[in-house]
Length: 163
Image 1 (cartoon, one colour):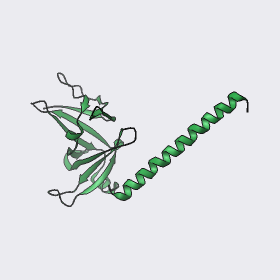
Image 2 (spheres, one colour; image 1 turned 120 degrees about the horizontal axis):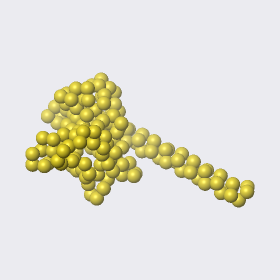
Image 3 (cartoon, one colour; image 1 turned 90 degrees about the vertical axis):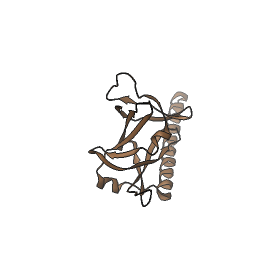
Image 4 (cartoon, one colour; image 1 turned 180 degrees about the horizontal axis):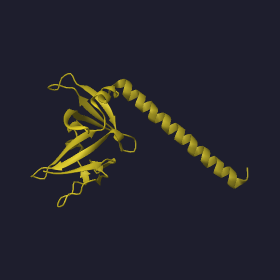
């Protein structure tokens, strides 16, 4: 099994999830770069970076923003036999993807979380309240960006016209 660790910058492409990924360790014959399957990333096991043998959950969902960029992962943690788990939201800057290729060429992914077990417990729960707050935050960010862009345009137009 060959491995490489990747820094993520995800985008949706051609019916699959494409990752503009930068390999930290180069693989000699077969690179794990280019086009990645969201289906293969879903259900990937999640581990702590500080203890890569400590499995803390699995990827339940991949959240995209309006630009089709991955915003966060939803991790189901603490589940036993699929019951009793908690779904938490993990922002992009708190994890990295480790990709491997099996002997048959199939990809295998695992997520390494840059947090302690206690810090995982403090991450926001993925529920309706989180969803509504995230949507409102995105709308507010767009509104402030749009206002700033219009304001800059108006200042430029006024400067050109001599107002």
